[in-house]
Image (cartoon, rainbow, N blue to C red; front, top):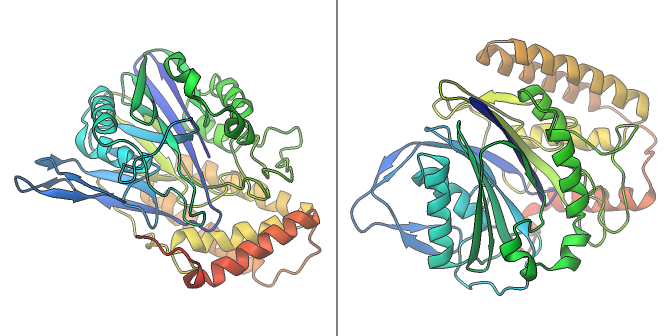
Length: 399
């Protein structure tokens, strides 16, 4: 599951996305340089091979560590794309493209939002959608919607099988949250799976919150929202905390965790991009990034390692079982740290974030507390911890 929004204003566009996936599916930050390819070259996507184009643009991708494609990303021309799962009564292609593959292809080949939209639509119509979408769930596949933006406009693309619809967004707010929103595809919607995902609740919440977005800071606040008066996640046994944009896994029927987040502010002159590179934006800080300046964050795997994603995951999981006073202390410091980063130069912001993460890893390492969570959540996360530590024993290890 995911939540993505765009705010189109005169002279600038704001974009935000939470990537919600399996709790142990680490998400990598990958910088890919522009490249020239030989005539007739072929491209291996996650599950299928397609013709390569002559030139591909430089990109920064937020992608599940085992996939070729990306959940979201930006390119050298200031195009940003995010995709969402949508549920429809259409069959999948055995050798189709993943929605994540289409995000990366749109970024590598499109120098404007409209160009990327046209490329994604053409690829869906030519190759279809299909293939395993989940790290842990063998049978989980889905159709896709996309928000595509540059400094002047945004486009929505929704696709059920090879049926594609699109809409130009030139002003105002638009949010997508795992539900079909265009009338051309409404009759194809799988309403039961859409309901299980709490799609309409989340879309309404994000649409409302995004109406007040005016900068990257307020965009971050949308992605950190739990939809509750006390600011804490609201859990249900069937789908965990899936009713608000900042998701926390824990349901027996559906369990998604926000594993990475991105916000962008796009203008014709300057673009700002901030990513967490880590799970749980409510607990994370957003770091400034650019396509041209790669950062050494490590390449995560399915098992705890020294990548940025897994280093923060220790903090995330320790805080899940922490008592409220410690969580409040942590959140106050996280807020002040983010404020300092927003005011700092880019390199200084990374140093501030690294120092903050190191201090809290050391502070939480000896922690032993009474777990205040419901028993079903404790059992769920014990299972996730066991799977993470024995990641190589999982039946699924990537392509």
